[in-house]
Length: 216
Length: 216
Image (cartoon, rainbow over all chains, first blue to last red; front, side, top):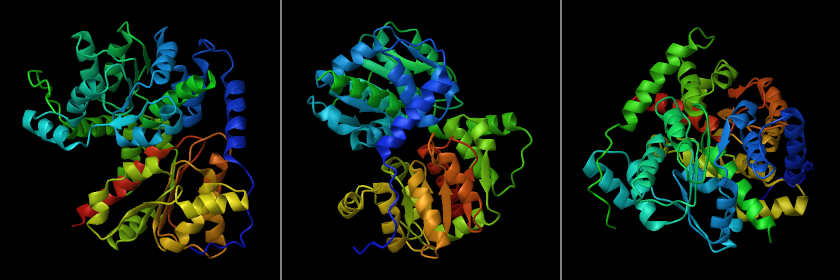
């Protein structure tokens, strides 16, 4: 492959951009209700969305950060609801501790079972996940039905996630699914309202894995 | 794989959720300045972000929709700036016309060249894209440096994209890169401000490929 190597290089580095962005976020956010452990998640969510309202709408179970760090350091599996979340998650920090990132929604057995039961692939992918990734961290950015199914399985005692990051975006069931998640007394990170999405789930997970890595 | 098949299926279908969401968006958005050709893009961006402010911030070159439909129907290549955009794009509608979706940012030659020139992989990935995907549609949701480089190459006459969807999110250079894009007299879709992101780029591209498909 021949590049046009006579082009003048632009010297801004991604690392510099990120650092400057984080400073701007802290400055513009001002006072906030988050703990020092929660703040890196809030900061990275605002960085990924440029949306302070979305950052301020985050809600944390008191044990969320601690539990997420513990699960990642124990090498637990990470379950993404959709491929956009899966590809966004920084892998080296997960793999360093023996973990791995999974998405089941396009698996052949999941598609067949969803068709047979006339339900969504998102729901069936969660039923597969609880069998394949016991104690794992769930990053749900897209599918409210996946989050609602996971909540139901937790209530039934069939699922024991290490942490649920549940931030689906949308107009139908998204806000409601997050309200249900916020009622559970297990580690969760969620937000209030319709906003959310794959980059929000990715940002939260990556912030936690970075904290896990920095513990050494 | 053995599923818990005794679970009661939830019968909400993704198609129903989408239709109901689109109705809600049209109702809540009310009056807007967009043409009937532009509106499906606006609607799908709001659907992906639950953010009316973001939807209203979209800016279209007068020929954007027409040019995008034409490029897709001609089987032109689609270039995504990052993998999150690449995986989000609906492939069957692109492939039906002989097109394909590409992301160059993690290619070995791109990484080596970026290192050699001490610049970003995003910039070098665009230099590769203009050689590999002449006349293609660019979907840039993440990297302002990629968008700025593409704009520079257009101005120099080295790049002739069919359509640029340029909606990077962020605090450093994102808004500025989109202002520069909006000054070009070539087909573009962008938005004003810091917001944007991979789901926005994906939503815009998918809305256009759906229009391309519906022409038969």
